[in-house]
Length: 567
Image 1: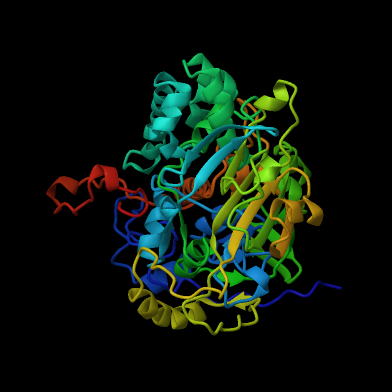
Image 2: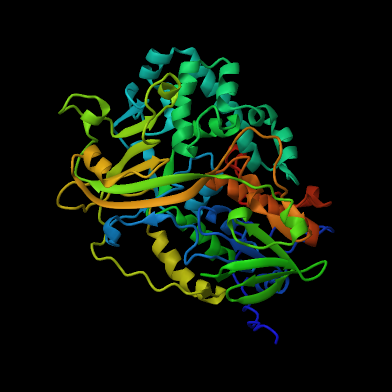
């Protein structure tokens, strides 16, 4: 008996632009003979040629890659919402949401930053946070300082840092990080490299040395003191990746201390990826669990899910393969090396205690403990007790939404057509136009001050431990255990990006750099590659033969140019 085959999805690319990163210039790519596509009616062109690609997405931490690759018609998501890791205190929708993970992005993350502007999303600047940061080795604070803007990258400019570590260590560390970020921003330039494998990209960017050494080896071999490396830089790698500087490769260690200007989207970063999906015009299938991807022919793939079976010309897999429970042909599955992930415990809570218990940290009763506690394993290396957590940070007061009456969330639709998205888009754009880009200060709050606290740890923390840490003043607690970050040791080998003709693997980028932003870059590269191979096209057009006679189009300044948005 033949399995049930659902009817083909409706035409989906009936939108102003097909791709999330290509918001303004989506229709500017050209065919090989340089004929512009702009003269072809958008609906007919995209509807006729783009029922070709299916993105297979994962709900745990891979939303950035998945929704950034949505040039195609179909997106299959195993969750009921794209890219969301937010929760509300007390499960009360009247409160502002809090991020469980993937909490911040920075200004050099040009795709995410640009998306917040293009989609009229309000940003919260973490440099507005205030308080003291302590660096805890399990028994003592080795160093305490003001937050100096609330971001790791701003530590280098602190007089207290210079007082403890001298001028040379932070200056050299800052120089090394800047060398890395200067090359990183080249990935947004008009001449950005397109890569078919990550080894080539590593060589093009001059990062072979960074990936071949641990963070500890690299910074010390380049003149950064051991004390600075194992206290401040390690605190950054532990809070960002739950890995110490003797384990993590130097590129990711450098990324950990490049978090100057950290921001998040008010209401949750998931809104960026939700907007990507909506603006892609993709046919979205929510709560759809993909079981297998198999060859139908030399040019087509069959995707089987809990909703049925459909065939596609190309598939982009945007989920960690070995934890996805998705079956691939055996000859392709063996191409993807196993990627271990860090099992992290996240504890979110609310407390009326304005700071942690000072006695726990060996301070006098009545003293004020830091409201951001980062950790170093340097004490453990020297025979001290290891810290019981990676980080403990206060994330501001619990606040009500601007409207005190929460609107109930609608039941998620398992299939969202482009027609419905278009219908709702006008309403959303009108509402968004009234929003400022930067978040306004909240005007309402609970009657008694209550703070949100987030704890990262390698083991669960008990109720008794929390009661001691916050002196019995704990209100709401939520615990989440998940595979949060890839394990990132020094490496020179990476998974293949292209598994076969028409089958691409976004998460090959994870052992290289693992962030929300870099998953959008990995996706952009795959989409560009797919366009070139299958259609002789590209995200950004090649210069036509008669370009010298054509009227040049205005471009933003080089430092503001973002490949895919401005080409």
